[in-house]
Length: 452
Ligand code: FAD
Image (cartoon, rainbow, N blue to C red; front, top):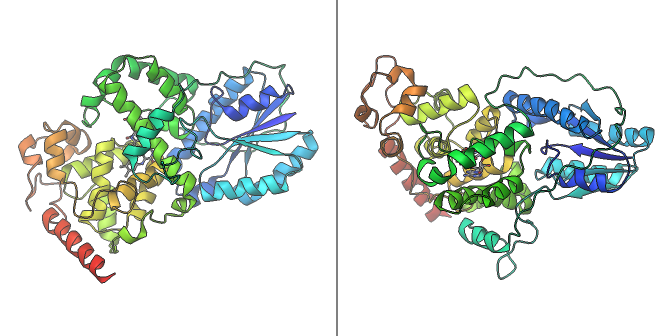
């Protein structure tokens, strides 16, 4: 009997580990292990746990349709897993365990322990990535640290991505064991499961893809796919997305969307090669600014009470839904580091605690980019102006008013104007002077460079 261990890959289609296990011609059984306390150590918040819970239920149904029973365990810490899984292999007569490679340090350490300690082989496979991270190197055999040449190389290298089918149904097997108790109250905006992901993908391709290039930066428009929660939990593979894309007419929209999928691949590639990123080390430590501690400012940023309308709208969207538009993620991240001079790690952790699509590689990559110490990072002297961003991408203030109801009656032109005045009686004045704070950041960083 072959056991497939599911983690951030909650689907039955295009699942290399499941497919390979089924090819062995023996009965297949499945296991999912919830580790709530370990997740908390990784800053994963309740929304991510809920999202996994809902998708594990959907996975159970999909697997049952293939005759594969899913057993769910609750092991609070990764350390609890090797002995228990070893015992299960012996008791249930498991011949081998199959899983995908994890990218984080702790995930890799756990896999290594399992490989060393299980009484049966652990077979690890690359998940359904668009490219083989171990094979993508520069002409000189080095690693890419800049996105554009990485993406160019991927586009040359990428074989037409052909997703794997789900395995053929087998004679239904009895469950290995009764499930452990694990339940979450699911209150999310995204319907769970592969079918929902496939419907969202198809709708996006039909209705929004052709205009994606123009609409993607406008937070008030439903211009992007909103598929990130499905990618993050592995309910949808990037190969399935790229395959759907290849069925569409090529154009600016399709090219831009592929580029975004490649940004995701780029951050995963960096994490694959620099596991220390998952310990929140800067990719380029020399480009790291000296951060200042200010709990009150951090709290105001978290609550969306900075007095900068677009920043506050973004943070409130995040707090209310567990998702934020990409353009506003960039602005909110830039504001924390360049205007408030607060360590990007605190922003990274807060995003992770709130996001339903929280993803170690993309979140870490996005934050290091904003802080100036990551790949392709925004240089230290460049920052996003909250007013210029809202003027350009939310000119009528629709997004701002949706999330900051105190500003419902304020004319759009006022929303995009700086100044120490109150926009509305119950809305705070700007908490800092944007120009002065970003200038201070630049000056301090320059001085820091001169000293080192
Ligand atoms: P679309 O525009 O439809 O793009 C399609 C897919 O491409 C996305 O679902 C996502 O998987 C990928 N993608 C798009 N933009 C990026 C990007 N800049 N970097 C990496 N992948 C991208 N994305 C996450 O999935 N999880 C995170 O935890 C996360 N944290 C971020 C933190 C910061 C500070 C920043 C600036 C960005 C972060 N992103 C993160 C990237 C991006 O904001 C989201 O992927 C995007 O907003 C999701 O919306 P969508 O599915 O509609 O994207």
